[in-house]
Length: 88
Image 1 (cartoon, rainbow, N blue to C red):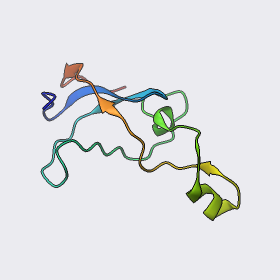
Image 2 (image 1 turned 180 degrees about the vertical axis):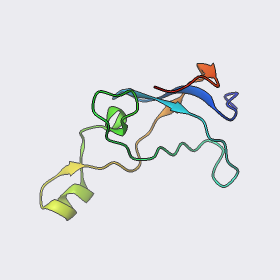
Image 3 (image 1 turned 60 degrees about the horizontal axis):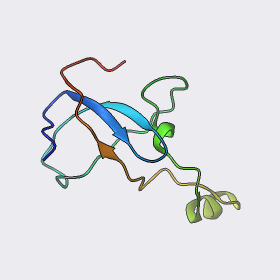
Image 4 (image 1 turned 90 degrees about the vertical axis):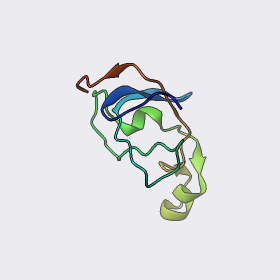
């Protein structure tokens, strides 16, 4: 729907921030589903933390006894910016 094909590059973004991703198109998930592997590379374009809101979640409370951010189920959009370009 967005014109994405294999290796297209574009940001995954939401109200918190964005992260530049390279598309890997598969047929084993919903058409409008974005999966981003967890990565914590400080000061890099590819850092999952860039799109994680600091909203307290019940999972943080359950695991640590205090409210904490939940990495799963973050809402984001993907915008096409280039084809086959390398992701830094």
